[in-house]
Image (cartoon, rainbow, N blue to C red; front, top):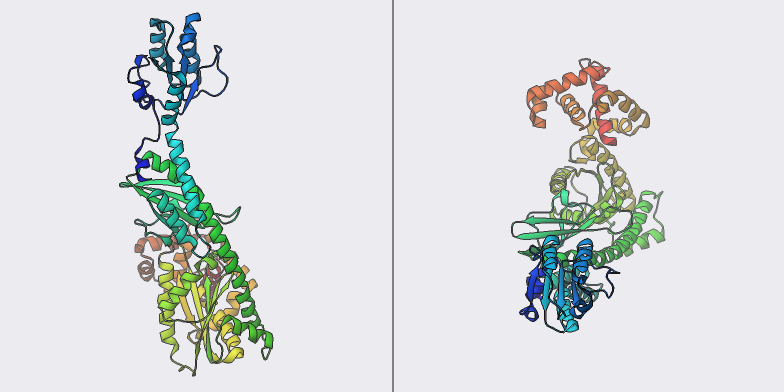
Length: 526
């Protein structure tokens, strides 16, 4: 298969004229036609005008017809120029092709050749050359289909990538929603956001060509995966075939991923149902719930410390599902082992200790979670993730109580406005008093109304963020500039603009506090 990529994918007039069968042919005209593409071979029509598609065709004429029609060559050249046919081969002409025909061939740029040969055998040999690229592509696609069809359901996506590489002599990779490598060869450089779009993209990187094929799992959805196929010093033939094989492989991979998604969604629904049953416990768990927990392999017979993980912004349940395995790996690396239950806006987990943890032990747990979430969000542009941790309580009923505390702590963590934050319920102190305000619809309406003048002129959210940090740092332009990485004068100019549009006095302590709380609420709901 490797040698097939060395041929010229686009056959031109010069390739046809290079046939050994045409070594004795005479080229009478058509200067400049050598590089014109030839995609078909056709016999000249019996009448003077053709029917059918002759575009990019080498036309082979029976020269015996010239005995009764001196102008047949001229007429043929004219309609060939109209339809875009680049080469006319006259076989065994009954009379010499005239000077006017030669000049016309030069004028319209159509190769004019005469040869003494068998017309059908010559046309058949030309067809072998002209259709070689199509045969290469057909063999490659058939080989790709055969390799992909042999991939069993248990082998999954890596085996599909191996089938592509075996066909194309390439290096293939499946990339996920955040640009991370899901399977296959490492990517250097990584796939940039501008290439993670809804249409195929071809990029040249040094001596390599990178083909990016979006993989969509359901009609109407945006792509959530991209198949990347890379070839080193590829020919035109490789690029043409690779683009088609990539589309084909993308469909196979989508089928595999859809099957996996359905299994994951089914399992996620079961886990979420069991979690909701725990949260809804009134007193003692019934036998059905205990059986479900046992079937899932969840451990609750000990001191349970709940963790509530939440993705900021408009969380996508499919994104949560896709990131579950990565979140599980991140938590395992941080030595946090426990169930991981997908929710529409994040995950719930808990740790179980055989003995009651010390009241001061939560500090180390917070540090581990903070590092884990920072690593999780670091390579994901725009990702915001927050965690709340409850106190340890004994048994299943105790887990319910810890889950409620963890959710409350996550709300406070999200109100901080930073990209990642971890909050333990025992660290909240006076902040717990504010939870009712943060979650109140009435205070939310008030906050949005109060800050609407700033939001209306703040397309990039720079002003609102500056205002929040400014108030959190005791109205210090210097501290604000240090935290935001801005020049002090920039902070001062932004605050002057904010003061112009706000209807409150930021120098008044009560009004300043109201704006500060409003910033937290708007940030939380964003």
